[in-house]
Each structure stands twice: as C-alpha cells, then as structure tokens.
Length: 529
Ligand code: GDP
Image (tube, rainbow, N blue to C red; front, side):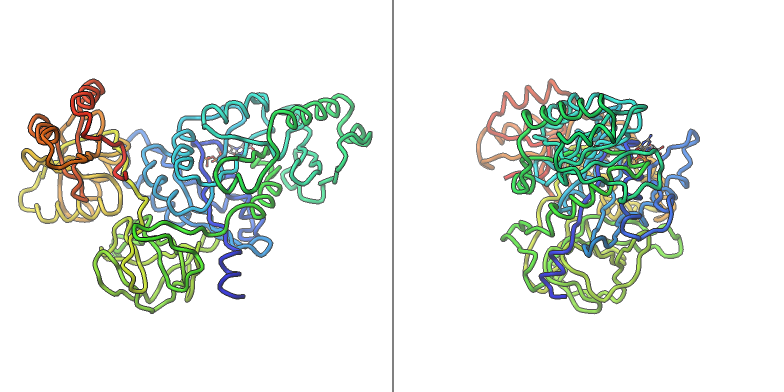
C-alpha cells in the first residue's frame, strides 16, 4: 500500500460527551465491530471516581487506566481507525481540550433522556471554534426520553450546531421498534437482544410501501412517514462538504448498550469522516502527504510504575512517516533525538512499531525532554500552534513546606506543568508562585505527586481569582498600557511561556478594567492573533 493510501485509510477522532452519556459503551461496541476485542467489558472506563476518603493512590491508579485507553486503534472495512480518549470528568477538561487538537473529527454522544449537558456544551464549543467535523449520536433510545424533534432543537440551540438527521427512531423506550436509516434507506428493527447484528437490516427504498405496516404496524408506520416528511421539510439535505467544513452536523439515533444503530453510525462515519487533514503551523500550512515527518506532542502521561519514572509523550503525526531509530529534530530544544521503542496502540494494547503514518499516534518514552505542544520534524524549524491555555477555575499560592527540598519542589512543579496538569503563574510584584487548575482535584494530585515522585512537600494558600486573562497591550509603549501595568501591578503575573496575565479578582473588576483600558485587550485563552 502506498503512502497516500495509508493516509487516506486513516480516521483519527475523539468521542466527547458528558459523563455517563455512554462514551465508553459506544467505544467498546465500535471496537467489537473492528474485531479488535472479543468481548464486552474489555474497555475500561477511565472515569475518575473520587472516593469519600480521597484515596490519592486510587486516583493515580485510575489515571493509570487511562494510559492504556488513551488511544484505541482498530481496522474496519480496511480503514485504520484511531480513537483518542477524552476524559469526561470536568476536572480533566484541559486534557480533553488538548486531545481535541489531535483529532480530525469528533462524535458527540448525547443521552436521549438528559439531553445536552454542561460538559458537552463546553467541548463542542471548542470543536466549533476549530471547525472540526462532528457527528452527533443520540444514545439510550431503549429508554424513555425526550421527543426526537425537541432533542434536535436542543442540540441546535445549546450546542450552536446546524443538524440534519441521518437516521430517525421508530418509537422510543418501551415502544422503541427500531430505526429508519435515512443515509442508507433501510430499516433496522429492534429486538432488545444485544447480539443483534447486521442481518436484521431490511432495505427500504420506498417508505410509502405498504410493507412498512407489516413490519412495524399501522400506527408506527404512519407516524414514521409523518416524521420523515417533517424531517424533509425542516432540515436541509445532508452535504458531506458542509459536514467537512464544520457547518453541518449529521445526527444518528441508537442504543450503544444494545449495539443498536452503532453499525450504521460507523459505516457512515468511515464514508464521510475526514482522513488526516492539513495542519497550520506558525510558519505555514503542512499537508498530510508531505514526505517529511512533522508531528506534535498533545499529551504527556506520567508512568505509574514507581521503578520507571519516565513518561510517555503522545505525538500526533501530521505529515510524513515516523520511523523507529531515525533521528528527528526536537525543534524547541534544537536537538536531534532517536527513539528505539516508539509505541503504537492497538485495541487496548500498546506495542513497538517500526513505522507510523499521518493520523497515527505514537507514544515515546521520555525522561523530561518534552512539553505539551512541542514539535518534531526532520530538520525544518516548524512550530505547531493551537494548544492554547484556558483560564483555570481555581487558584492557590503554592508554598515550599520543606526548605531543604526547594530544588526538588521547583523541578517537580516544572515537570508537572509541562505535563499540563495545571498552570503556573509567577506574580510580577513578589515572584510568588500561583497554581491554577480546572478542578480542585488537581491540587491534591499535585501535592501527592510532588511528594512521591520528587520527594518535595508543598502547602497551599487561597488566592481569590475570578479569571486569568492573557494581556495583549497592542502597543507596548502606550501611556495607557504603562498606566495599566502600574495600577494593576498587584494582579499581574507571567505564565510559563512568559506571557503577561491579568488575574482579575472579580467579574466586576474585570469589567471595570476593560472599560478603563479599552486598548489593552484581555483574552480568555493564551492564543490570539
Ligand atoms: P461514559 O461515562 O460516557 O463513558 O458512559 P458509560 O459508557 O460508562 O455509560 C454510562 C451508563 O449508561 C452505563 O451504566 C451504561 O451501561 C449505560 N448505557 C450506555 N449506553 C446505554 C444504552 O444505550 N441504553 C441504556 N439503557 N443504558 C446505556
């Protein structure tokens, strides 16, 4: 198979949802279709279950599980499918945001009864900003839930999408009879049997055929016809082009647990979902089929084995091939590195590979060379952008609790920040260090890991911040910016990339500051043009 064919057959995507909507179940069923696993239960749910006793070792173990499930790959109808795991727990939302920079498309899972939930809204917003193609899967149709049209409305309004259904449920919950597949023009009847498979599909080109009554009864047949008429009247026809541009999102209905509607979703997905796309670097647009390797680090995972404190850096290959033992340029450090045992991921295992292609993820053992966002090339000085930091939600001063271990503490903080566990801000006024996290859980994880991995102790002190805003002075020498710096000195800090950050202590003070210094732009993410 040629290089271009290898690229064309790859589909690298993420499944996003609010916890409990069915992401793990769907992932598992997809893997079953690929024959990559033999039985249900093989995919571990990587949900962080915080126990009442705050057992940190437990959190660590649970994080450990997610190393194995970070990338799940399988082959289906000759396509190489890479699923990148996206933690649903809100405290790990930043992990998910970063993973979304490495996917070429996304499947959004929505619970038919709960509708669109908070975490889904946040994640979809990030995908929308980047025009990532999205397919929506409405799950748990075997349960009583919201009316299909109401749900489609809710998805459009809350998620800001323009949907068009590619399947439509026949009944729901107790009366759930099956699904009409608009994309393939066939009917899938539901038997409530989890071993249900493709043979049960009945081709149905003409929805007006009296045969429909035979299969689903008169009442359901009439209802389905009416519903499909309404679908035709209200929603635009599906356009692959619009889907790929991120301006239209097809919707499927089903039940992951019963493996119902999953095959339809997968078949449509591999037809329409994009193969690895070109990616913008600071310097230029890089096409997937360029000969030379380029790739970037989107995730770093600490090794859970205390005897091997190395880490695993996850690289998304954007162009060219990644070959074992070939030297590549680590652009930020300007040094050549060779990797003797790059890992590839297959089903729930990882193994050493000789060659990987665009769209693939390789895991590299790392002793501290990599930071999230680092670029690897064959010599070109290229920097991939697009892993912005978002304002953390929680802020605390971090203090050294063991003066003899200051060096270990700073090394530990430095490395944990490179892994993307949290963000570090250094106050302009007194150089004190402030840690910002998305969830309160991270403070405990940091404290625990500093102690167990670096032998350092820390304490925290509250630091009330409403939001961190990255400062864009527009004109460094303006009087306005000078005054802003003087008056707001107490609230200014540097992030790890040496970008100036304004730590607003309340929504009110943020608004006042924006009004008073209209030319000093404040951004909620670290990347802006
Ligand atoms: P995740 O948190 O999004 O990964 O959700 P899980 O896949 O772990 O599913 C959460 C719960 O919903 C589990 O108890 C599943 O068995 C259940 N579930 C998933 N899909 C379905 C479905 O189609 N129907 C029903 N009734 N339950 C489902």
